Amino acid sequence: MPVFQVKAIIIENSQMARDIWRMKIYSPEITKAAYPGQFLMLRVRDELLPLLRRPFSFSTINVSEGIFSILYKVVGHGTRLMTKMLAGESVGVLAPLGRGFSKPPDGTKRVWLLAGGIGIAPFFALLEMLKRDSSKLEISLFYGAATGEELVDCRFFENNNCKVNLCTDDGTCGLHGLITDSVERACSLTILPDFFYSCGPTPMQSKVIEWAKCNGIRGQVSMETYMACGMGVCLGCSISKKFFTGNKNEETNYLRVCREGPVFSIGEEN
Ligand SMILES: Cc1cc2nc3c(=O)[nH]c(=O)nc-3n(C[C@H](O)[C@H](O)[C@H](O)COP(=O)(O)OP(=O)(O)OC[C@H]3O[C@@H](n4cnc5c(N)ncnc54)[C@H](O)[C@@H]3O)c2cc1C
Ligand code: FES
Image 1 (cartoon, rainbow, N blue to C red):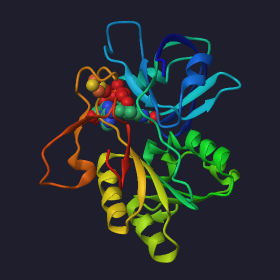
Image 2 (spheres, helix red, strand yellow; image 1 turned 180 degrees about the horizontal axis):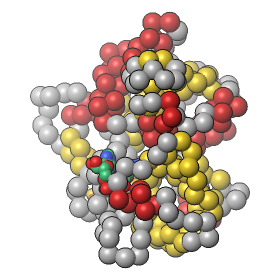
Image 3 (tube, helix red, strand yellow; image 1 turned 135 degrees about the vertical axis):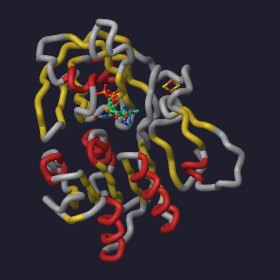
Image 4 (spheres, rainbow, N blue to C red; image 1 turned 90 degrees about the vertical axis):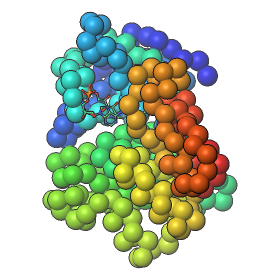
């Protein structure tokens, strides 16, 4: 697949929840080539600092309009600067990068989407893809954040026949507890999924992988690591293969999240 380096026009940049923003960007070539779960590297400013581009998942991909969006959380210098960008300005984008989500295996009936915090970002595009390919899939979203004010609007999921289960660390919205608690609870009350997709912080992904292995459920996790180049060169994003296999005795092999990921399969060899 081609990778484009473009100056693209910002269509909209607006706040969606506390510290969570959505930026819509016009680039027909990138939009056409992008796939849910893939990411882009965004050059926040043309000046020296911040020096490195920042990685973000494609959140929505609208091929007919040539517009994609990212959903981003303000955590530091780069993302703070991004909130100041205005519609009509241009921004440097390198994309699409990495391996995205793949379709669930044939015969899959039930799919769970597990989103921790800003991990909700790629699930908008993923849900569209899943619904397009099989309208009969039963899809449930488990979405958690630190507090209710950090949850983004989930009407898109509800309107697409996806059952939404919310939870917050402080109990201000939905179930009181971590997303993995919410998943464990659902497991004791309902039929287990045939397949899952998970995106969120690394400690959450670690627990999700353990849960999937214990229950024999296949799925895919999208990983976040620090990235400098985003193109497989610097090795800064490497993660041990043991993280996915859980086999502490095997030889240490590393996978580049930007190249072999960011989406990795669980329940089969990476
Ligand atoms: C493949 C991929 C997809 C991503 N998709 C999204 C997305 O859709 N939306 C989103 O908001 N963020 C996403 N991220 C994380 C995002 O890239 C970082 O939050 C962003 O680069 C921070 O830039 P900054 O200059 O604001 O923060 P910095 O000033 O660089 O750092 C501020 C704080 O954020 C932490 N931080 C920085 N980068 C990361 C990172 N990669 N992972 C975890 N913590 C980090 C630092 O430890 C520090 O505490 C993604 C990361 C990867 C690798
Ligand atoms: S970010 Fe440089 S190799 Fe992955």
